[in-house]
Length: 196
Image: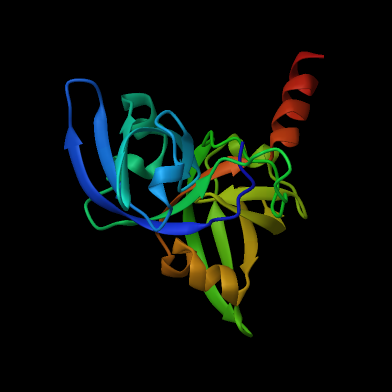
């Protein structure tokens, strides 16, 4: 489990196909000595398992399923990536509970300055839009955000200067594709309504 609070912006150091899956090596400021092989790390909101590591880097393997349902299939060497290590019991829950299971890929519709902040609107693939509610939570590229407004299949969020500066969200522009994870409670409530 994660909280949607990005703690490092890493960088893709290499990408290669293996006889198993696609392998990414990620440069990071994390102390990799404290990351166990088999540990979960969220990459732009996608939970991946560490399979190898060295000083300042670690490797993950990504299945075809994940590549087809997230933006990871578009990743190339040098790409910056929001990273978050898994939450531990007793950690502060500064964002919201995030599973690291990307629900879909959205497309940025607009980015506008608003004071020191930025208002970003994202179009959501249908039927995922049904699970997004005003003042609810959503993870965009692994960042926990509050939904400001929803109009049909487009939602808006406000990015404060800190979030804009210390995550990859500061690079967003119209047409950018972003990993989305809806609020876990919304997912289960909707499923209950469908089957009740």
